[in-house]
Length: 237
Ligand code: BEZ
Image (cartoon, rainbow, N blue to C red; front, side, top):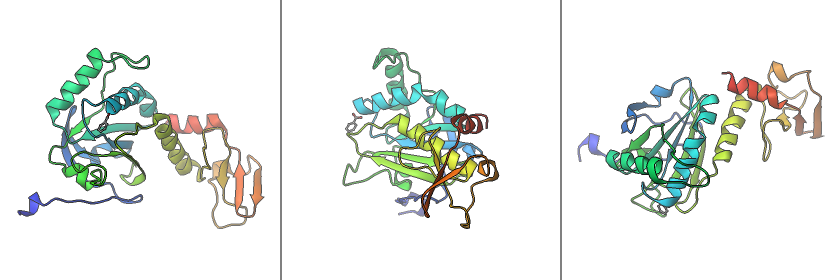
């Protein structure tokens, strides 16, 4: 087998640089992740065009695209179908499908054609125990420096929760901006986790001295972080 035909199968991990690739999409060619330098990007796969769960997901994600754009995040989809299948499916969604109050939904983010499965294999999206000919529902959150920050996988039968994907994006950005961690089920306005006073870690200056820290024990301290402050910081960038 020639070197450039070799199948690269890998499972990128959190903290890795996002594997690079060039691909054809419904919005033209992309050079990933370089085209997205300085922005967050969510790369997500779906098993197949013209299938019901995927259709419900695309309608939901496309309807929320502006919300993600305001948080400096682009969306990029992928399946192992070809470009003409993608185009026909997205046209069908726009022209014919009405679902949960959504209709005339236009998918304006790029959808990658990956008939060779090159990209799907590079990103560990083909999981043969689930299906060897389709990508599972993978979600990669990639930061403005091109580093993978969160990975979530779902099986073929389970549609994703896009509010949760938005929550993850905001939580990652909040951790970066304020030097804090976010507890279970955190949403903007909830208390955040800060390093205990006297420990080596410190929350960034903007957190310090403004709100009282509450320590549940020596290793578990929380502090208020105003919802508007979180949203103003994230949404103005
Ligand atoms: C769906 O999107 O409905 C689907 C796709 C592949 C396998 C099972 C379900």
